Length: 326
Image 1 (cartoon, helix red, strand yellow):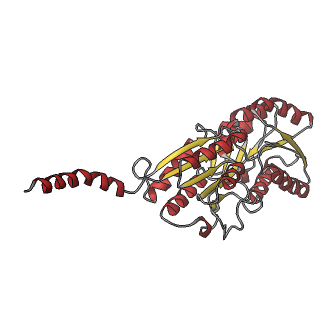
Image 2 (image 1 turned 45 degrees about the vertical axis):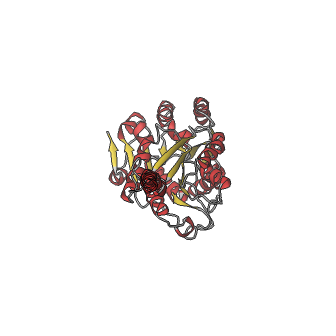
Image 3 (image 1 turned 180 degrees about the horizontal axis):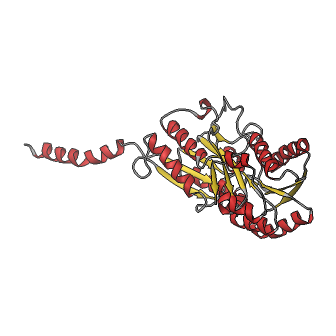
């Protein structure tokens, strides 16, 4: 072999691995944004990962996930979204309060966004319609009106003489105004007086319950908000100490000592969001994926709390409960 041919051959052999690596596809990155905290979101993350794996995407093997938690501080969302965009994520998953998805939508019109939240996405301007979301956004939502009506039905069963309802809300949550309006309409129909008490941080909860007690509140609902959910234990303790039975949207409250909860089952929203992300990574467009709603709901009753409050639980309520905490 001539010297020139030998050198050319060696050069080609050395360059081949570099060329092969350059041709390999880049591992897609998912931006996982949530208004809550990492500690509270553990089960949701696990369900999301399992759904991704069912679609063929395993974290660390052929997909990477960048987690960003707002820790109930909504003013952190713009910086968290900007950071994900700088990292060239393939999809943004926006969970928790509607603030997360609205912040992401405002920041990008090209990166696909999949939301998992409790707000009405049409009413809040997230999508054009449930069947045809349009643009770069789709996801999973719990339509709250029917669920709130169901919680009030449970309240009527457990507290037939109650006339005053307390409603804890975080005014920084962009869904608060519509949630209050929905509950006001339902309360008027049911003949209840509604006492709305705002809470912006954990330190305000004690004063909030003192206000509820002063207003002779006989039953309590907590708004769908990461701040309130992350303080489920404190809310349950305060509710029991003030003798105000709580009827809530997630099982965390009943598990923490709240009286009863009714809402979407476990981590259903996270699982459905993971399935949609898998489909988008395979090439489907958010605009073509209709907004999903969970189909599995559960009632969790804390019988120990009922006894502590001196309540007699009707047989019909016990029978409809999917889980009873003794």
